[in-house]
Image (cartoon, rainbow, N blue to C red; front, side, top):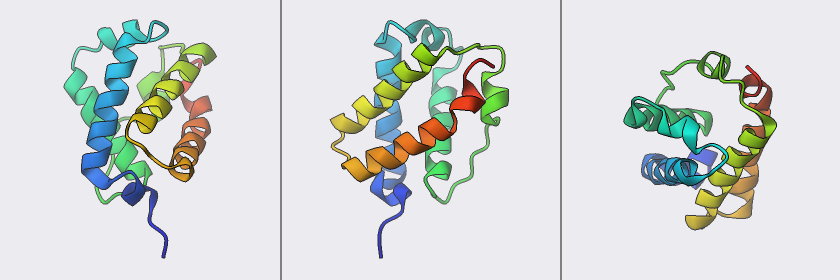
Length: 120
């Protein structure tokens, strides 16, 4: 039996480490850092990202945040910014030595959300 994406992401602890590194990368990425520097409660944003990743990957805990459209409405995120955030996620996955299949599955999820996040 193959592992779920949640298991391949190393469950809650792996997702926590991944989200921490993704957020750190966003904060230094010149294309998107100002969006993250201006978040009033970065720890809450990290918690929501962990929940989102975990629930979306098949983990046991629910996602309690806003849907992607509601969370990004008014932000007018460009394709360039979206791709920069995607690159940060994949870079963090490389740092944690995730296999290509896991990265491909996460990338598929990222792209499935594109129209729910961009230009809202």
